[in-house]
Image (cartoon, rainbow, N blue to C red; front, side):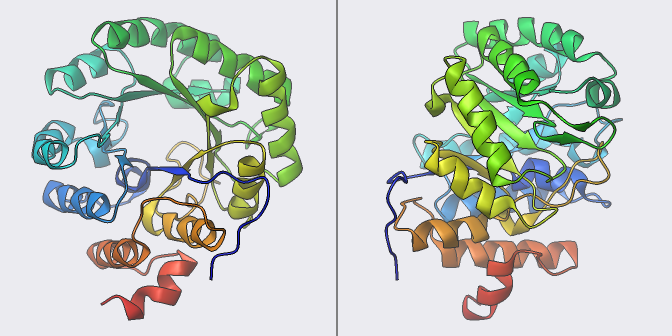
Length: 311
């Protein structure tokens, strides 16, 4: 039974990252046909934004080396579902060229709030990463393609420790100033707690950033992803990143465990009377199917609880 709570939005947009952020962390390669089917099932379950893949060099993320083969397989989805967004991650101008050549209509770039992670992830300083993305965002805007800006290590870094909120706000504001239309704040190693979430979001509001332009991306390393999400919703956030079945982590931060499971998020949101447009039973069936493709059970608690009722 849904019970509304004061101070929460009426609707939340889920930015589904399982097909990209989830599968990029798999030890084995998932066939392109399975990826396309996974995305198709996610869309059928009611998810209106599904991050499809990444145009990063295959040397760095071999699990997503089939981006050129995957994207054309999704063309029919966009035609069948007007308004559907299938963003892709691009690391540089070459990645942008590859994406635009295939008619991609949404992209994302990935920056870091800490120096060490920037160098380990993109082999550049945090400052150099921002400058690398400037022409990417500019050219995307000229092509009518909006850019989402991911900012990682917003609460803690495995090499540098706790990350000051002011440092995160500085880098986040600069990503938005580059022209990013949305900023996703990532708790890459899952160390955040609700007080830190409130502090950071308040910092962005004081810096003049409308909360409507902010999304949150929590990992569940310490079991805090849902409580952190609820805190963000109370601060006015209405876009939440999640991964079907709890897939994912981070290939460059070994302490990062899975993303917030989309099913766990939807269970909480629907229990609060918040609309998502997602059919939970269909989503659970999809994640159960994907778990079978990967040969292991889903870590999502909602999938574990409901999977037997959806087959």
